[in-house]
Image (cartoon, rainbow, N blue to C red; front, side):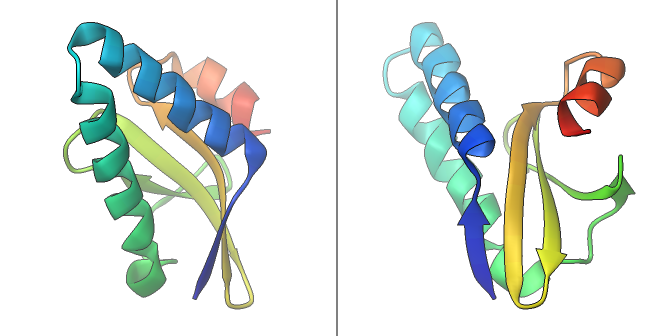
Length: 96
């Protein structure tokens, strides 16, 4: 499986990094390491996650974030990486 991270998802990751880095120095890097680990796991497990708002949702194991993705052929398209604490209505609007 090939993984493509779309620009919106990259911006989500950068925003998450800055949020956690403000909490404590080095925590932003830890956040990125964990989220990229979750994203890398999609090479093996893409397509097994629950479908939410017409996309697969992979929940991060360490942070309250979800990776929203679609699988087209042999490519996993990462469309968003969103904080699960956000309002579900906002998440739905962001994904559609």
